[in-house]
Length: 71
Image (cartoon, rainbow, N blue to C red; front, side, top):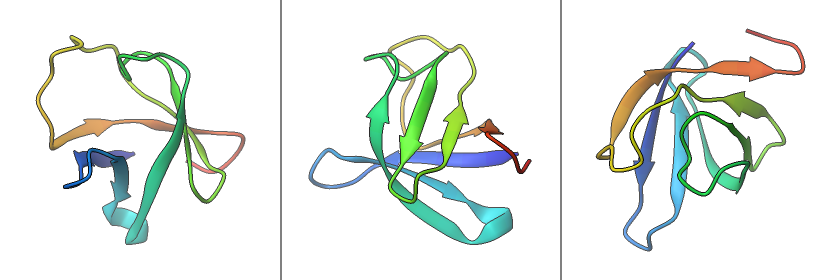
């Protein structure tokens, strides 16, 4: 599913799912560089993110996969 990842004014990361009109903070990351691993959202969802360079600029829209059911 297409998601947008952005950084807020305080430096925290959030993930927005337009299809579900859902925005949640990213509360845990498998990899410190974010890309190529999984992230956990504030609502408990786990998302697998694509491999990208660590210096990729935000905000960005990417194709991610929800783990543990769903899309």
